[in-house]
Image (cartoon, rainbow, N blue to C red; front, top):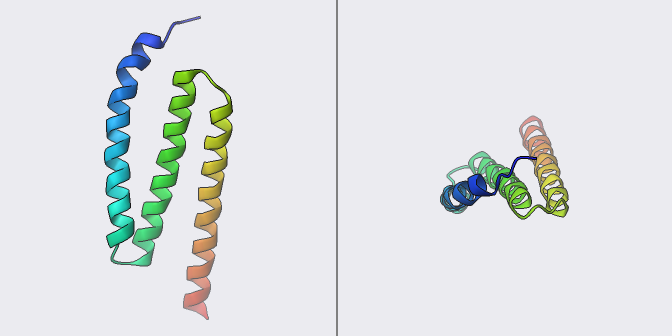
Length: 94
């Protein structure tokens, strides 16, 4: 088995700064978004990036339990997208 600890010890801090920057930009877009689709897209990106971040932490700490949380978060984000899309379509058609 290959030891990935040296690679992860370098990559995780770099990825953490990238994710924190992306989270900050997404939150700004949610608060100041000019339209509702922009806000929904920002929340969608935020949740999927958070799921990937949790999966990376699961690999780093070698705990398979965090993967389940990441999968549930990704499924929740997908259901959120479907709900908002149906709402926007009905609102325009009705």
